Amino acid sequence: MAATVCGNLYELAEHSGCKLLDLDLPTAFAERYPGPQFGVEGTRRLTGVFDRPIIGTIIKPSVGLSPEQTAELVRDLGDAGIDFLKDDELMADPPHSPLERRVECVMREIHRLADKTVRKIMYAVNVSDEVDAMWRHHDCVVRAGGTCDMVSLNHVGWAGVSALRSTCELPIHGHRNGWGMLTRHPSGPAAGLRGIQQAWEAAAQGVTLEQYAADHPELRQTIEKFWGKR
Image (cartoon, rainbow, N blue to C red; front, side):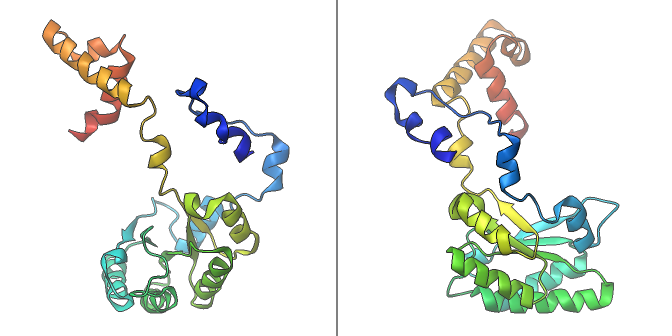
């Protein structure tokens, strides 16, 4: 399927502006692969949060934090009431913070807090790696009492995610890092330029941006993309 919809079609000069916008799959295809094993209900059960949003944050040990330093940050966030923590996409199993040691240190803090609050923080460990290594990382998380794996979908590939899901005992947090290289320019750089030109045209004519955008799609898309980032 991937070769059909994302193959050489995009390399043909005749289709220089071709872009995949949507895809409908037959039921038989969906039935071939298992869906989420836990879903929203299971995630809420594991975090113990039912009547409000699950509040989480990303730990950035990729800047050089050791496993012990990462655990100290987890302690501070846990004492403050965090529900969900996850590894950064750049953090996997590096020399300065080996996955097994990081999981050991972080889960020690999580268990300490759970003994007081009777609620365990969900920590999504980045197990992204070769398939055999992902299984080993997963087993490490399970042994430590962890409740979530994280995997970089675009980097381990569909087959890698499917292989992990086939034996995984925990929820899988699918991280979409790398998505921007596929979707950052929905209309392309030329349309972005036209949006800027149209903004100037509106100003020169004394017309508001909203009025001019009504029949100028490039300007409208530019406003929708960047208006809230001023």
